[in-house]
Length: 122
Image 1 (cartoon, rainbow, N blue to C red):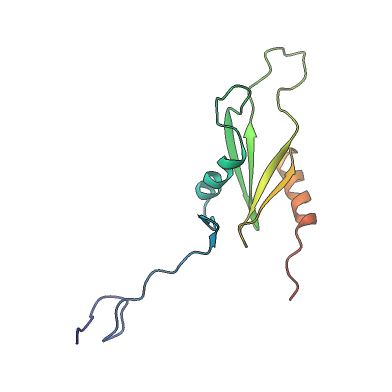
Image 2 (image 1 turned 45 degrees about the vertical axis):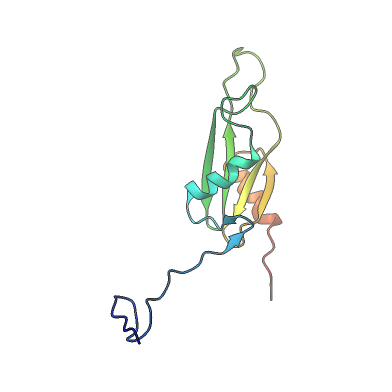
């Protein structure tokens, strides 16, 4: 019989393995802004592609991550803004569900998500 005397182990038992993070499909549940951004990249065109965004941003809040794109400035300052309509996404910190919200400023988009989010009452 092999004895295990490593930190984090009970005498005679192997060390406790690290906790397993819940999976959402092939992706783990995001725990940082960087992990949320990596998932969010799949929902926007590549940065610098023709007509695509110039950047992506993450806004973390208590129950999720809002991912939105930055668009190039309009060359004609008297014209309409270059930011298109469309939507941003929110990735839930609770279950990893990806939801679409309107392309509104962060606070308003988060407020819309909160109104639509209905946690299980069980």
